[in-house]
Amino acid sequence: MDKMSLQEAKAFLSAGTRTGKLATTRPDGRPHVAPIWFVLDGDALVFTTWHTSVKARNMRHQPRVSLCVDEETPPFSFVMVEGVVTLVEEAPDLLAWATKIGGRYMGADQAEAFGKRNGVPGELLARLTPTKITARKDVAGW
Image (cartoon, rainbow, N blue to C red):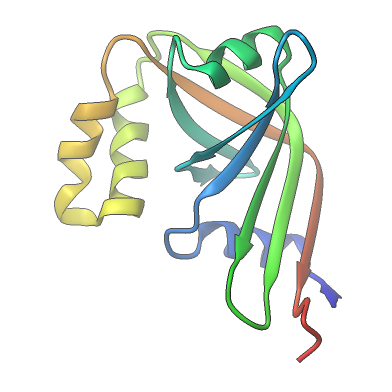
């Protein structure tokens, strides 16, 4: 198993349509994990969530989160990001980000439709600023 450089980790996070598994903490301390679609903006990870979702409620209560993105085929790799999320209600650039995210996961031909679907009032723009990144490649040792 080898460590990834920061540039390799960013490339891994940006490649293809790998989903992130976002871990948040409920007010009573129980963990909650949910898959998310995201894109990178410099060092930050940007995603959206509905204002009444469990993860939105959790991040309002405790903005410290962890995100894991992995490659599920040999030789296996992963990036774990720990950090703090900032939530923005009525973000003026929500539609633009929702369109970028939709384009990544659904393709350029569907980007606008998914942007319009997810860039609506009630949807929050979330920005995860990393405080720690753990990134490994070739976990199987091939």
